[in-house]
Image (cartoon, rainbow, N blue to C red; front, side, top):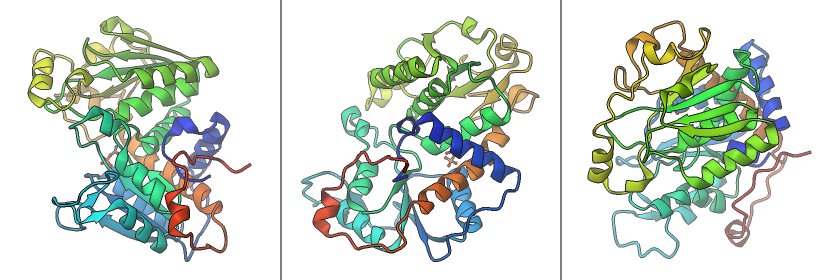
Length: 357
Ligand code: CP
């Protein structure tokens, strides 16, 4: 395995192996130890769960941590544009930053949310892909503009833990939020559930469709797995659901235009998951959310504190899924690392995501 950018790039049998290992670790299986190895954690964006769970996972595996908070004065501002004339705030380019961190660590994990200015720029995940191109080591995506694969791996683990049928129905429901949030989590939830073979309905108001390429990928994954993907703005999509997964995201129609986007959301405050909404799902339905969540905005207290809620198990499974992921990645590292030339790093492919046979 050589990096982890998007769950959908892994074969289902490899995801099943990781999930099975995560569930064993949850039941206190002994983690493999990798003393003398190092993991870099680089956060350009805030985090509670991802940060804490990777720190804990590294400790369980005996891996040294190099942890950096980018932005806010902790690290030099990093530029990721090709050919950028660096006469602005950023003092360092990702070409050097990634290559240097790659010399100190065996695996790098990076979180970089979208800038929210240009949809085309953000769709290319420039910071994540900069680290993948120039670090010379496997890179884990801890949430980029487009994907949150660690969350998706943990969510698949939670669905298996809860014995949700592979062909069960999952409703990914948009919810109102005071800010236009990124689409990484809904993109990864949708494609994860489609790959797992589930009947997925994206419940969203008109104007809040997910990106066409992501919907197309989800449909292709569902074709392979026997699942299905549909979209609806009708609350009837909750009927008979095994899982309700709530998430907010911004409208792509108004990307980069905060006031137009806010106007599009203005009349949608009633898009909040309540017990009345959950009553349409199966009586034993599970409510999921990646957290953090705004209470009584995205979901009512009565749901979050009620019998359907699985959000704390979901968060715990971040630890077990990432411990399994790190075991898989560190097990694939060569015993002796040869130092790559700068040229070799620059020519490295950006789509490295191969499980070793
Ligand atoms: N779900 C999740 O990624 O949480 P954090 O943003 O707190 O890491």
